[in-house]
Image 1 (cartoon, helix red, strand yellow):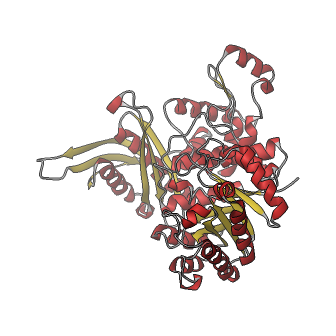
Image 2 (cartoon, rainbow, N blue to C red; image 1 turned 90 degrees about the vertical axis):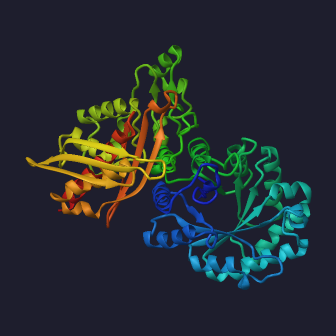
Length: 526
């Protein structure tokens, strides 16, 4: 079976999507998930473009991913310059990734035009060749991304080919054909790739955007035409209409066409990673997304349900478990145990398939999801739920009550928030109060203050991120909200969730789980 390299650019190209903004910690978390998924390459960002990307590369080096190679993205040196004198080129070297992807202009109009480089066609070939040649001794692998290749191929085939040849002469290990405008048709992709396989002796890759809603089809067509390297993003995140969606490309290639993409034993993680990226980015998950959408294997019509019960292949093109998804019958929702078993293994929880506790956990989770909970991106809350259902964990403290007040005395002063809380630990009552920067922060400070008397380790906990999502806006300010909190200490970080029509109550749920998880995980180590 032929191997197709999977190059993920969620952390770079995906962040160019509207409404997408990952923090440094978010990017590290996603990189870890992608490595666990088994992608071959992770394009982390553009060193020198912003401080966050610079810090990310140093952090990823310390993390030491197990499988994926970390790549940096960058441009050729500027016209009229030598690469050794170009600051951005030096930033690539300083970032010390495993490899780099250098992009250059393959469309003559972008070289000569006002919106392009504004240099001669020959100068463009020089900077491509010399940039790659300069970087070659510094990195094990260098890829060349031929920007706007298919537009250039249509407009001036000879020049587009000369661009690729210049990259090859410079020492590029792979040449990636970019449908940057996202408007190419599969027939055009097939024609160009077939031409290159006969006229350019070099490993080829494909990088498609989705402006014509064909990025997945174009990527698969490129593979059928001879390419063995695909670039894309989780959930198709990307500028304008997005990039090629790896969550669709990977199962199409592996399950249906027999290519090797991800390690077969990790294919079932696709659904989890898709939802994880959405939750971490505070993005609404597309429930109708193929393969990994909540509705991808949902059945509602009576005739469909009847047929699926007897033979799922009647209305399912694959077994949903292959990608970590599950069948849903919308009147009597079924399945889900396999997902729980998998998560239990991740948490080192012994939960057998025939254990009645697994069925009970599925029931609890489904009831909570019906209320608005989602545990993707909130593994700490899920682990606590499992342990409680098994009778293996009791919360380390009991709430006796709390009150939160916000007082604004005039238009010229800032609001003042104060939280009062009473908890019980082993029969002892602690009643305390704290001020905060807003009601949630006040509640957080009060809870910490109360717990530290009994558990000094709580002072190590930091709240790293706080996200609020309105689940449905139909009820206006009375809508249900979901709160996701990321917390950390000196050794780990974890995510918890809370849901309520009251944002303070939802925040309280997530805060309590965060503190409870800290105490729980510390007790496992002792």
